[in-house]
Length: 217
Image 1: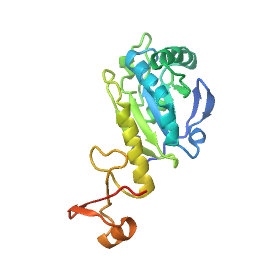
Image 2: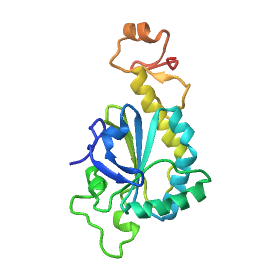
Image 3: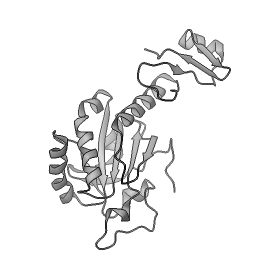
C-alpha cells in the first residue's frame, strides 16, 4: 500500500549501526527526517551523508532527528561511516538503518512488494531507494521527495522544506513558492477575512483566494 502525505509511518523495529529500536520510539516528540540510499559506498550518497553530518547544528536548531537507511548491513554501514566522515569533514553522529531484507524500503513504498536483492547486485537494483521523508512528532509523513541516483540532493532545499512544514504546522498558515524563513506567508482559504484579521492582523489581498500576511512571531 502506498505511503501518502499525512499517513502514519510504519512503526518498524530497525537495526542500525547505533543499536536496534522502534522508529516511533526513536522519533519521540521530535521531528524526524529519513534519508534513503540504494547502496553503501556509492559516490553521490557519500557526499550527501557528508552534507547531512555538516548540518548537525541546523537539525538540532529545528528540533529534528535525522536517520539514514541503506539496503546493506550494519557492518558495511560502520565501515561506510569512515568514508562519510572523511568527505564531510565532521563526525556522522546519526544512525543508519540496515535494510538487507528490504522491509523498510517496501513499507515506505520505495520498492515493490516482489523486489529482492540478486547476487552481484548493483545500486541500480534498488535505485528508487533515493527518497527524503520529513516526519512530524505525530509520526505522520509531512513531505517526501525522490531523486534519481545521478542527482545529489539539495540540502538547502531540504532545510527550506523543513522550515516550511514546521511553520505551516505551528502557525496554521501556508507558504508561497520559493518561500524562506521570515518572508510573508499565505492565509488559508478556509479562514474568513474577519477571522484572518483577528488571528493575523493586517493582511494583503492579492487575489480573492490569495491573501498574504507577515510571518507570525
